[in-house]
Amino acid sequence: MTLLVVENLAVGLPPGLDRPHAVEEISLIVNAGEIVCVVGESGSGKSVTSNAVMGLLPKALPVKTGRILFEGRDLLSLKPEEMRKLRGSRMAMIFQEPMTALNPLMKVGDQIAEALAVHGQKGDLHAKAVEMLGAVNLPDPPAIAKMHPFRLSGGQRQRVMIAMALALEPSLLIADEPTTALDVTTQMQILRLIREIQSRRGTGVMFITHDFGVVAEIADRVIVMRQGRIVEQGPASEVLNNPQHEYTKALIAAVPHGNSAEKEPVKPAPILSLKGVTKTYSRGGWFGAKTVVKAVHDCDFTLNRGETLGIVGESGSGKSTLARCVVKLVAPEEGEILFHGKDLRPLSRQAWLPYRKRIQMVFQDPYASLNPRRKVGDAIIEGPITHGMPREKALARAKELLALVRLDPGSLDRYPHEFSGGQRQRIGLARALAMEPELLIADEPVSALDVSVQAQVLDLLAEIKQRLGLTMLFITHDLRVASQICDRVAVMQKGAIVEQGPTAQIFGSPSHPYTRALLDSIPGRAWTPPNLAGAA
Image (tube, rainbow, N blue to C red; front, top):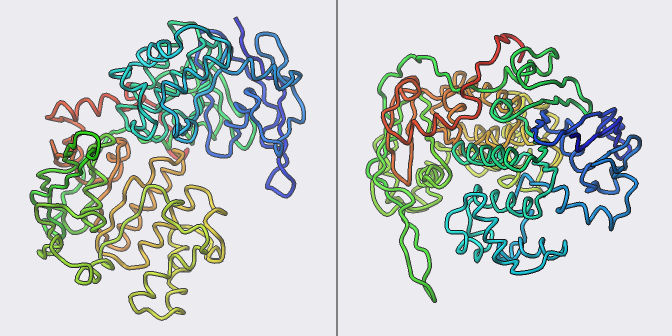
């Protein structure tokens, strides 16, 4: 049975932008009991299409032409009250960032119960909410129901969103990038959950993603979008294994597939050595029991000159905390952090300043780490000027660095919000390189980027590392990314390094069960992509 039909949809953009329509001539269908993956880069019109179906477009994005038929009714002709009755009851949406979609002041059980009450459900709604939390495989649903969203992990919050979306058993579920920033094991759990629910209830699913690995895992049919138009669509097996459009080929070629070739070993010349590093945090107190959590414990590794060491693991494994210990953003209680043989841990703030120039960090979210009120040129030159470089020389260096990261040197006078996510990440990289560091720490620098932009940033990092002779500590939850850029890999679980070694060895013959579980969770791992050499 056909649930959703979109015919020749066109959504306008405000005047003065690079194109007149956000989406144009969009036609697609979603049948009951199938998963249709809509694939494309940021700006391709995927989310605009899904928001048009849900009636969630802002006034600045008016529907110009077309029809959207859901269960035979034209959604564009319905009054707002009629759309509100459909949303949640017959059609529901899982948003990309659950923390912004959930009310931070309400317990999650109350939020699900509220959705049920709004649509006229009677009886013990709290018990129904707990039942839904159990249906999405959350541990201890009664306890989870009493928690606020900020107390849950990213994967748990995403499950709460799924529970809320499915509470009224809608016939159509739209999932907008629900796994983009999740680690591979949580991502696989969410994908299997959506597939299980879809097959059990006969739900039609419109799944929006930029990752063909995800498509290979769950899709029945695929629709590829570029710059507001559909460029290719068909059964998943055909699009994955025999893509016709050059853009589809480029997207598939950009997906890192976790196959690591043997790399030339780096000569032992230690720059950074960690021995027994331990960092703990305290929780509770006041009116509850106080608990001590070991975010990092007994961590040992050595990083040699010119080498890239990947620290991989799930969210909460301690990767970012370990990186922040190295740059003294957090202070470990025990262990040694040796940089060229000098222990950095006991150094005072003043004594640490000279090392700040030699060790730089690129953060996961470049928009959060760039001051939105300062031009990017000022952000890049601030560090060198603080360390004594004349302003004119710093500006000239900033222009060179923007060219190095493949941005227009004239961009110095623009603000962060005027750049895309990938461009902001390049600016963050330029800012770190402005200090001419010996050691670069990259904390999840590509986790939220489109696969094509991700591939560009990874290629850029590899090129810059080669050109400048950098040593790199690369933090990631995506083993596919680690296989592409890292010489060696250290796997972290619950604050401890459980396995480390050359990348090809870790991927080819992992010895620890946790490493094997991570590798098995790579989306699309069983899919062998066609040979698309040169497409990217």
